[in-house]
Amino acid sequence: MQVTSIDMGQSPSSVRSKGSRKSFRGFVRRSKLNKSSLSHTFSLPPSEEYPELMNINTATEEQLMTLPGVNRQLAREIVRHRQMIGRFKRVDDLALVSGIGAEKLDTLRPEICTNIRKQVSRASSCTHSLDSFRLLSDNKLCSVNSSSVFQLQCVPGLNQEIAANIVDYRNKKGPFKSLDDLIKVRGIDVIRLSAVKAHLSLEPRKCESEQHLTNGHVNGWTDVSLNGSLMSNELKTPTTPCRKSFSMPAKFPLTLPNGFAAAPVNDILDLLSAYSHRPVVEEVFMYERDGVRCCRLASWNIHQLTRDKVINPGVREVVCRTILENKLSIIAIQDIQEVEAVKVLCEELNAPTLRRVREWRSNSQNWEYCIPQNTECQSLGFIYENCNKTITIEDVAVDQLHLVVEAGEVKRLMGLLADASSERLVSCSQAFLICGRPLILVNVHCKDALGEEDSKRLKEIADVAVAAKLQLAFLGEFQKWDNIGLLQNCESLLDEEIKTTVDANFSGKSTILCPGTIDASNFIGRSGAVKSGLCHLAIPRGWSWGGPASPFCPVWTELKIPD
Image: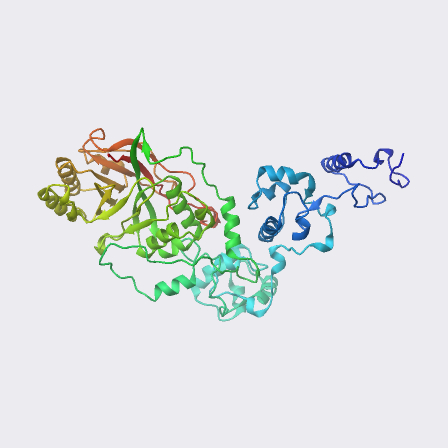
């Protein structure tokens, strides 16, 4: 019987017959489980009889293409993902690569490994971790006078705490005049200072016009190219309801700061998105209920909605995917601080730049928005889906409803809606035609406990709408249930015990109110609050990551559309 050669001292159990490929792999797996390795005096040459497992941390594209079911495109995806994360820690991590599912991973598993001792060729790898891309040249220095905490903590020798101390010192004392002044920062001694000075400068780099992973704005992201175009045009009061008119770049041509070369931010975002939970849609809503057409109305306090906030890709992804996953047709938005932010969200829905938004196949990409002309009410607005395969929605002026409602009632209702706001309450109204059926939505944001006059005006609006047989709804942030209880002639479509915040540090109560009774309206009675999928690893949460897009969650209800 032909056997492999054995050095003296080896156990006879190491003998393997020629052609026993399967048993050899079993031997490799058993030795790994026992955490023991073969003696250096015994080695099996790589051959057809004794194949080595392919190390996916070092294999080139060409070598990966020798694996079953791996073409050049998939091999390229594996290498690209590996460059993003540095290395695969386990074979199961390969499932995160685009194009590799559970079935293909099971096929590849017997052929691959992540253990460097079993790699195909140590000299064949063209891949390095992100740390190996650190460049120490002068044009890659990090500015102590302009860099954020996130940028500074990437400098060798600085951690998050010391980076925060640098920024805090800079905010209190002003810009550093010399790098030696860093010795005054808590946590920096002479030894550390001498180690980090080679990576720091006092002035920002000329090429710092690229977008970086920063922590200097509301949600830690800023796009200088966008900011420049927006800052050059002061925000103007729209004379007509706003329409989509803001274009985002199809791809962010960005790199990480502090000398991380060849690491596009888009690749980092793909990785963060892959690890950010998206909920499994339990019910496939097809715009009908019990054979009757219907649509979903929603309200969402997105909290301090600014241009800087929505530039954060995590915020855009959470907001857009939440709208698409829950098939929300009209969304009333509260706490808008800059109209440009609504434009950015609407443009992302119409021309998605984020991979997860592009992947949602049911997106009609036909979204519009409207903001009131009154500057005092521009903290409120609406985003709506203009048309899909089942329903059509168009916004109209309230005074145009005289075509379907008695003119006298419309005029009276317009007067009441115009005077609904006060110091404690901000409101705006918008009329929609859903498949030709009129609907008036009153977007509400309560800042404090409602007074008697506030509740009286809202109740009068509800009474007029019921008398005119006109479908109307109040929706928004009422702050607390006591404000809702003041409107005795309205019925809430959400129960009082439903919590509408996702952050314990914030209090609020969002709901949707139906004038009169639900049974006498076109509301079906189905409603809910979306509480999952609201966080993303690209959104800061204090000094960590994985925060929510808003401390408030969206609420929704279903409205039937009679034929």
